[in-house]
Structures are given as C-alpha cells and as structure tokens.
Amino acid sequence: MLDLSRRFAYTEEHNMFRDTVRKVFAQHLEPFLDEHEKNGIVPREVWKAVGEAGLLCPTVKEENGGLGLDFGYCAVVGEEMAYLGSAAGFTLQSDITANYFERLGTAEQRAKYLPGMVTGDIITAIAMTEPGAGSDLQGIRTTAREDGGDYVINGSKTYITNGQNADVVIVVAKTDPAAGAKGTTLLLVEDGTPGFVKGRNLDKIGQHAADTSELFFEDVRVPKENVLGGVGRGFVHLMEELPQERLGIAVGGQAAAQRAFDEAVKFTKDRKAFGRTVFEFQNTKFTLADLAAELQVGWAHLDWALLRHLKGELTTTEASAAKLWHTELQWKAVDVALQLHGGAGYMNEYAIARLWRDARVTRIFGGTNEIMKEVISRGI
Image (cartoon, rainbow, N blue to C red; front, side, top):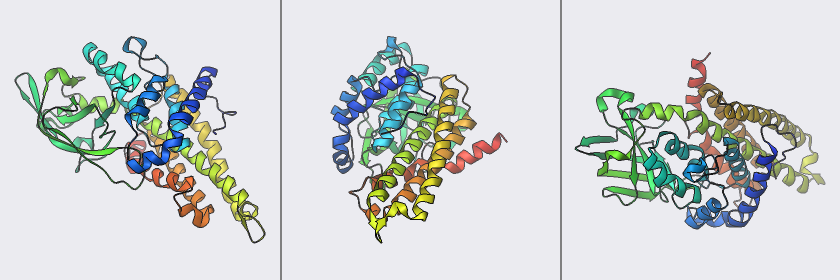
C-alpha cells in the first residue's frame, strides 16, 4: 500500500476518494489481474463497475454527467492502478480522451458521449500512431477527404490502447495533406461504422491486460458533425493536451517504481542465503538505499508537478521532464528489484515479473524519452 504520510499534493477529500478506489479495485480488479492478463482485455463489466463507483472521468463537469473534480482525483486512480499492477485502460479515458470531448466537443457531442464515458457504458480510444508515424505526429498519412456533408477516411492506425473495447475513436487524420501540421483534424468514428475495422489484439511484451489494436479505415464516411474541435486544428489540439498526458504517465511510473521497491524489500528480508537474509548483505542494503533516496525525491517532485498542474501552470517542458525522469526511475527500480529477486524474479508467479514487463513501454508511449529530451532541450 502506498504511504501517503509525506505527500503534500492531496487534500483530505483526495485521500477519502483513494479509500474508495482501493475498495473498488480490491473487489473488481485485483482478484482478476491474472485473468485480464491471460485474456488480453479488461471486460466491459469491470469498466461498468469502476464507472458506477465514480472512478472514471472524475474531472468531467456535473452538467456532462461527471463529478466536476480536479485532476488530482485522476492521479489517485493512476497511482493505485500502477501500484496494483493493472494495465487497464481507465487512465487513457479519464486523463486524456475525456478532456478532448469536454474541451473541444460541441454541446451535442458532449451530451452524446461524456455521460456514458463516466459510467463506463462508453469506452473510448484515440488513434494517433501509424505504422510509419509514432512520436512524429506530423508524419501521419491517414486522410479525411471532404465529400459534400461528410468526410471520407482512409488509412490505418496501430498500437491503439482500448482498441478492441472502443465504442468511439478519436481519429487523427489529414484533411489537407498539403498543409502539414495545419492540415490535421480530429474526427470521431464509432464502432460499427461501415469501412471501420478493428484488427487483431496485438501481442505485446507487457501490459497484456490492455487491449491494444490495429485499426483500419477504408472509405469510412462520417458526417462533418463528427469533427472534434476545429478543422485543421488537430495538431494544435494534440499539443494542448500533452502536459496532462505526460504527467499521467509520470504518475504511473512513480507508483510502479514504489511497488517494485516494496516487492524487493519484502523478498530480500524473507529470502535467506549463506545463513542470513539477502537484505543483510551490504550490496542489497546499499542498492535499496539508493532506490529509497531516488523514490523520496521522486514523490516530492511528483507532488510539485501535480500542484503546478492543478493551478494550470505546468508547462509542456516540465511535463516532458516529469515523464522522462519518472519513467527512467521506474525502469531502474523494476530492473534492480528483479535482480534482487534472483531467479525468482524471472518467474511469472512473482509480481516483479509483471511490473518489469509492463514498465518497458512507458519510456516509449506518450512520446519516446528521446523526444522528451528534445522538447526539454528547446527550453534551455
């Protein structure tokens, strides 16, 4: 269980909410982690249970069916999920797509989608990445051609979180291919739209419980009313959401690092070698001491970043630095913790194995950590 005694970003209300999160996850998520991993997807009934408990999209305003809370409540859910070791796609919906709908959506779009997103009846995805375009979103090739009162979408996307479960997808497409970034538009495509096909549930190294898919669009016709935000403003809209998206990744990275550390402490204090516990060896103690110091710094920095964001002051550069630092710490923590488990760490029956597998992608998604360094360097 995460130690909250030295945290300073959260209020008593946040802590009370966290108690609810833990109870709901203990009932609906934790007992089924292995099942979700095996099946490669979190069932819709779990989404419904989490939504009915008020844990999905807590920042959505009351007039749109939500609770109207601040991002700190999303962060609480993200921390508890990461510490638990679940790869469910709840945070993508709460931290990312909900903001797109609420900030950019028309009154009709907000009324149509947001209440269901809050309850878990509607599951969303955002389709940016393509086989030939990852961190460089200006390189996307999916097009949306204007045809009377519609747009006709052609192209493909890959590595799309919630891709199998998604009822509606925010698709990043070029409405004016000659205009570069200024020709990018966000369009809503619902499941079942003719020409929209969900491909296979991708076989990944880790995060097996997260359904991650290929999506294909062949002459997919959607009305112009399905434009989300402004025509030609898609790239700008994506950039506006980066601070919160990258902060959310940092939140999960820090909590997962703490879980890996806790698992290592528990294992080394229990496991004996050469007549004493593994923890008693100087190498073990010094290795864990080093991690403990970095975790202390990490939690202080994360709370600083959260407070900055809650005041609307966290910059893209700062969020990129947070994503970089906390995911690098996550990787160090899971790798060190696995090593301290010895051969047991390589066995899937131990939690550290899943934590290690799931950690590898966090330095890639949300913009690779090399891109984070590029972003940070521009502000130096």
